[in-house]
Image (cartoon, rainbow, N blue to C red; front, side, top):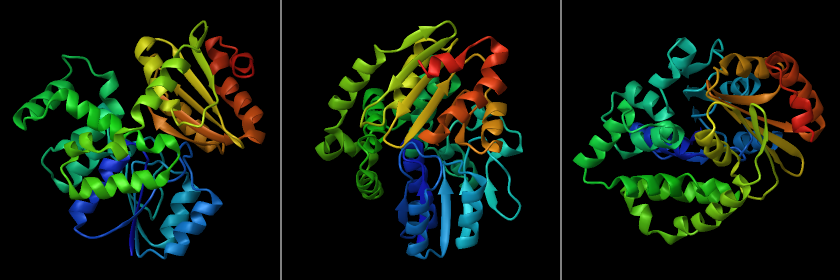
Length: 328
């Protein structure tokens, strides 16, 4: 049995499907708990119990210990586009680790397209739009190219965006099975057919109402836009993106609270966060991201340690009292 471990969002789902089609075989699929950029002990046990012969990891920058664990468990290979680490003995296909710019590889689907020498298709573009579309302006090369592709294939732009929104929303209820059902559907049907599948689209109205109400609760602290979030829905990244689109010249932060842990999510257009991501990982925190985004998940017992860390290495030098903001 071969296994694909993938991110829970559109890019991760599209990448898992592209890889499946290229390998022309059946796979099992596994995604970590939404918001966790690491494998829990329970998840490691589940993966081990599957006894996989081959494991692929797509669109996830897992911690070094997790990569070594997977590499020791089976024949292991990674396709990714996030900041991370090269590890001796682990096969990682990630141009960013070799010095490429993030704009050149805005999604994991772009890495797979290049590696397998593929033609563009709706899955390739859905990964880009899911991760990067909210940043694109009308004159940007990627958006112009996307619209050209859609026109050639007689797909309405609004339908394409709705397809991505629906696919990207399945994890937000916390029900992993919905993600696996979605992969099965997309492997057997034209992706755009999802628009008529109520089993996948019915969650949208509830999620939009939750985001609408939570967006109003952001507070302004100088250069920081901050929201402390406590909801059963996984909308942290959505809210941070929405706020970023309004204030790209600020540090947009959402702190999500769960029963046993916190999710810290920050987006900004002020500066490159790549070095902060490296420092976060090297200091033992479970985090990841790209040049304009940092996501970190931590047990509640580690919250004070993380706040002091990010204050000392980042915010204090910028004249921002992040300790006061996060602990308000």
